[in-house]
Length: 266
Image 1: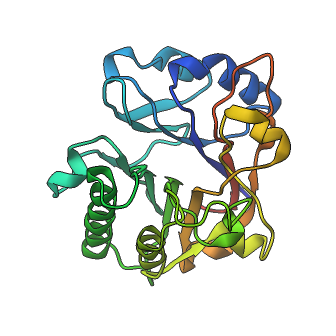
Image 2 (image 1 turned 90 degrees about the horizontal axis):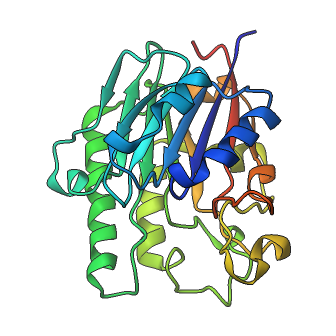
C-alpha cells in the first residue's frame, strides 16, 4: 500500500516560520509528501525555495507582496499548475492555486477573512465565494473527479467549530451569510474529511495569539480538507497536528496544520 501525506498549513508568513517548519519536518520524520501553505506574505522573488528544496520539495506559488499568497510544495511532480483564473475577483488577490496530478486534482485556497457585516471586506468575501463556486462548477464533475480541496476557508461550518457558540455568534467566521457560502460549496459534492473520520468531535485549527488561547483551547475550526466521494476510499486518516502550534521557544503560526494520509492515491 502506497501512502501519501498531504498537509494544509496557514503559516502566517513563510519566511517568519522557517525555524518552525524545519523543526516540524524533523518532528514528523519528513513524512509530508505535499504541503499546501496559505498566507505566505511574500512575493515569489523572496520565497525561500532552497529551504524547501533541501527538504525534497519543489514549490509552486501564487504569491503576493506582504499579503495573502498560496503554494503547493510537492515531492511528487504535478502534471500542471494553475495560478490564473477566469474571474477578476479570483485574481485580484493571490488566494488560489490548482495542481493537477495524474490521478487527482488538488486545490489550495486561502479565502478572504472578511469583516463586519456591511463592510467592503464582508461583501468581497461573499462575492469571492460566489466566484470560486462558479469556477468549481464550470470545471469539475464532482461525482467522478477525484478532488482534494484544502486550505484556510475563514468560515466555521457550525457551532461545533467554535469554542463558545454563544460568545462568538454572528462574528467573523460564524455569520449566517458566510456559513451559507461554505455550505453551498460543500454541497457541490464534497465531504469534510475531519467530520467524516471524527463525527461529532470538536477540533479547532486556529487560536488567537492573545490571552493564551491555545492553552485554553479557545479556538475555531476554519481550515478544512474537503474531498469528493471518489477520494474517500483512499482516505486513511486525518489529524490536526497540535505540535506545530504549541511551541514556546519557536514562534508558531496561529494555525495548526492539517495532515491527511491517503492510500494508493497515485
